[in-house]
Length: 100
Image (cartoon, rainbow, N blue to C red; front, side):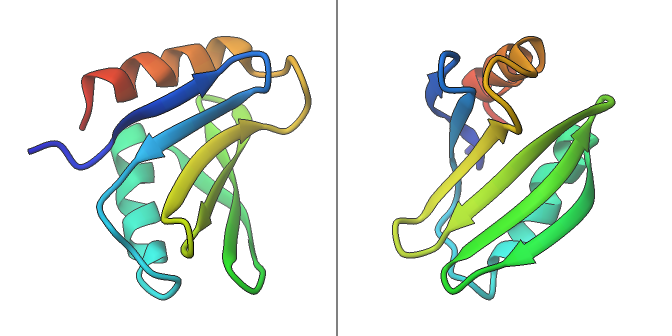
């Protein structure tokens, strides 16, 4: 069974929502690192809020945000600016559509 898949792709909003195994606030870092290894991406910066992990990541030279909110069990990747990284997000959408 595939652990990561595509839930929604909104190119106009620069956001890609990912299906993942269930996680909580404390277990997300392990899940996030596994996801980044599969994508061959790296963490540039991390921020923790009350219920949200926000990681700036580098994917093939492109900076994106990986976010995870444990109350809604939601994980998404988004552009740093509107209409930025459209090609990379479209590529990631195709990868997630096939699943990992």
